[in-house]
Image (cartoon, rainbow, N blue to C red; front, side):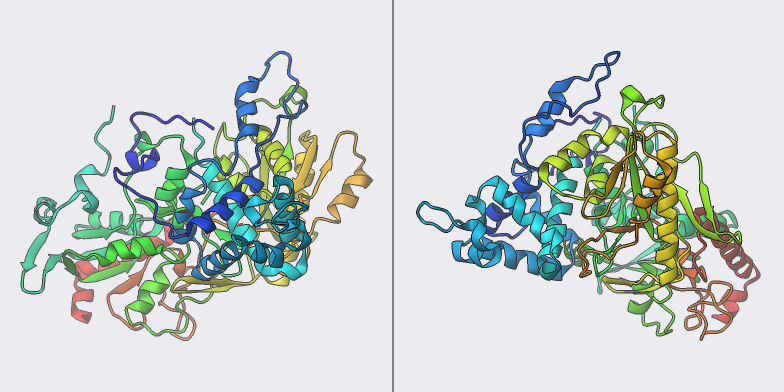
Amino acid sequence: MEGKESSTSHPLLSGKRKQGCTYSHGFSSGQIQTLAAMCEACIPPLSMPCDSIDKDKENPVDQKPLQSFYRASGSQPPLPDEAKVIVKRCLPRAVVLLRIVLNILSFRLGTLLLCGFSCLDWRWPFILKFSDMSLEKREEILQSWTRKRGLLPFRLVFVVIKIFCLYTFFSMLTGHRKERPLQKGVIETMYEKDSTFIQSLTQKGLEVTEDTEHNVCKIKCDVIVVGSGCGGGVAAAVLASSGQKVVVLEKGNYFVPEDFSSLEGPAMNELYESGGILSTIDGKHLIFAGSTVGGGSAVNWSACIKTPDSILREWSNVTMKLQIEAKVTISACGSIMTPPLMISSGLKNPNIGKNLHIHPVQMVWGYFPEHISDLRGKMYEGGIITSLHKVVSKDSNLRAIIECPALGPASYSVLLPWVSGLDMKERMAKYARTAVLFALVRDQGSGEVKTGVINYRLSQIDKENLQVGMRQALRILVAAGAVEVGTFRSDGQKIKCKGIKEKELEEFLDTVTTVGGPGSRGEHWAMYCSAHQMGTCRMGATKEEGAVNESGESWEAKGLFACDASVLPTAIGINPMITIESTAYCISKSIAESLTSGKIVEDN
């Protein structure tokens, strides 16, 4: 599959590997050989079916790219050598399990143990290791792992392989510079040396002193904001405009529209927490959280797990410690990262990290062949979001909202159920004309964020509301003229719609339910998503009710404020950006007034 990126795009967003970079996944050659065999079974080389494209005589489709797509294999470079993605992004326990399975399958007796009679052959040596089995047999093994209830560890291994393989494969698809708006105020430390870094700080008007004895660079300011998303960005703007000297710390990089290429993989890696591959500990919910200058407001469509070990190692290579003295400290790291910061800073309030709400999402899809539909264009064209549908109960209570996500081919392929290699390729060949809707609920259930671990559990009412929302979304797709609709359930649940009667549709909808995640013991499972995380340092009238007070200030540390989605007391049931910005505006205005009046200085 060939890609093309703009020559003006930022190097970090164009997929260019650093010179001299080597693979660092740590897998043995035998494990990589087994992984390659799994990737080939997941994305097999196939002949293109005759009926795989729309029969549009007016706008005939060029079959060469499609033929190339069907012939492509998951065992081709850079797969599986990009296995470092697994090591960087997956939970450590999942990586350990994967290594064990790959190692066992790299031997004939191990393959017999895990795959049974499927690995037997009439020819010497009679028992085949996994990589020597036929493609059809390997595909059958993966299919059995995803279906059988008694093979839960292997299902989890399959999910890891599927996400890694499909995401890496499809994220390589793709389709003048002026001074950037924040250029005068930004210091990109990755491009600075010790000497130039201090010079850059002083040029920005900051008071900087060096403690050479302890190798510390001290910066003085009025306010320090950790994080630059919807909360931190607003807080920094309000406080700076009030005359305060503000320093914003952001671990992500700074990009402007001109920086972007159409390569989804590098963009996801640079713009989202954990490269957009983040799940709850049970693997049921995928979490999309922005991790760039602007945070969620910079991406705000289509996207928190433990910080990748490679990043931690990079940070541990300290050349100089920073000590920033400020009258006020604002944590605006978002609901996933603010609690670990608070806890690692010594705060003990039991509400910190609790009350996590994520607006859980379940998606459905509908296929609209171009040659029989009046709807023109492709799923990734047009406005980002142009409508919102509310699903209400008979007593007018809101049960769910239905929206349309922005999904690149890599993200779509990860969520898509994998039934077989052929089925996957046929579905992806229809990607451009497949409309996806999602049902989002204001969750009554809640979770907890600890350092490196996210726990979350849906309540029964959340499951019921998601189910109602999914069914309504499917009705919308059918009414819009889809010839086929379905869910993202592991068995590829779908139904043909041409000539369908209302009774038949309702019978199908009765089978659409909210199933468990990959870690559940049910035969069918699905992955849930979340783009909105909130509530993990919620406001409260007392320290027993919340992690911070009504002004966003910590009960335990004067001058320490939370100013992001973590302060919201409950889930709100809609896209929260404006709510977060409004809350941050009120908190930061109050901080500005206290700083101006000298109240905070007096209290401290």
